[in-house]
Image 1: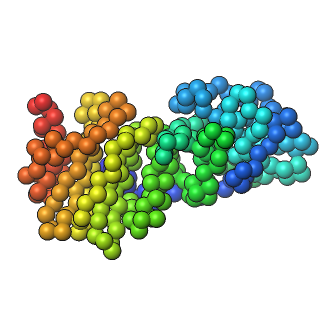
Image 2: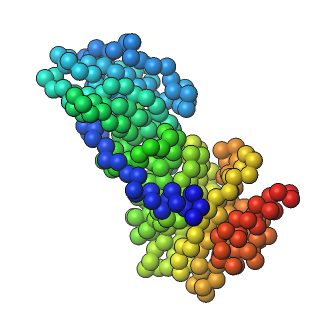
Length: 295
């Protein structure tokens, strides 16, 4: 089985329940009411833009163990808590914020931060915190913070998963069931494939993680979502999705990602139409590979 298909098919098996006591949306802590742990502050993570939220470690008044949160900017006077431990309590407490990544969804920048927390004297866990940055400041993305998160993945992959999951939640509103097996998540782009069993319609949303491509979702009447895969060629990545239409014929969708831009490769779909018609995803992938080598 293709590595992307395998990863997607067992996606839920990698879920790890986060144990953080995250603050509710809207809760903020005044910066002048805490003691910053200066030596624990880190420079901006290389994976984040300059205007990204800044992680801070601090003690609440009379607390003996550290908390951690985010400042919307260098001039912010309020902290958006990721994990706060009240005075008199010892666990859980924040050890360090280790990484961060950005994703863009619906015209708004979203961020994920990874931090380590001590749960007991012996146990330490890794937790992810999701937040969006708007003109009003930082807003926790509760739908993601309250869910399970992925284990043993890069921070960029977690950002891609966040965008993928938000699209899946939008699908649910339209009675579109996202196919985990046939969708694809990579560090730089996602392909979310869903189907409405009542209307028999399939929808494919393909986009980059750090920007928004502006390409419209691909909607089509279909009997089933058949298969998907990806192919890396040089600096470009190609995503292939096969669906069965109402006449039980196989239709293909091919997307190309390069330099953080994605577009639908309709010309390749036309050139490979006979291979697509076979319904064999490996045959389509090999035909695409040969075409790219010769061109």
